[in-house]
Length: 142
Image 1 (cartoon, rainbow, N blue to C red):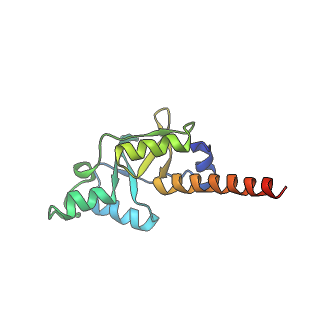
Image 2 (cartoon, helix red, strand yellow):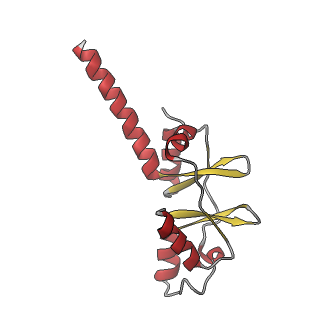
Image 3 (cartoon, rainbow, N blue to C red):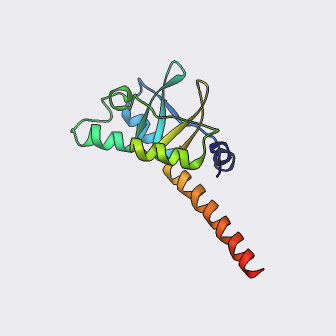
């Protein structure tokens, strides 16, 4: 089974981040521009949380707040579930399933080195299953 560093090697390890004191509007604008569903939140250059489209809809829109008036720190998820690049895809799938989340920052010590989504994990799992099926078909054909 693939390890997370292999996923990052193929998809890239670009990390998009926003400071906790920035306006939520800035974060949403960045998500739209970068076509991502979540951003790392930093304080003094270190991981402080994660903010996602889900945070925005539940903590801003549904509460009638304005994204141009509140800061990322007010809606971010502070208890961040993280992965390490040596974990396997199935281990990370279990993590996202258990925590009911969609994005995992990938850490190397205290540094964020990438971000993976459930979509990335599912794609890796499907690719691996396809490879096994192809190998079995070749074996059967002789």
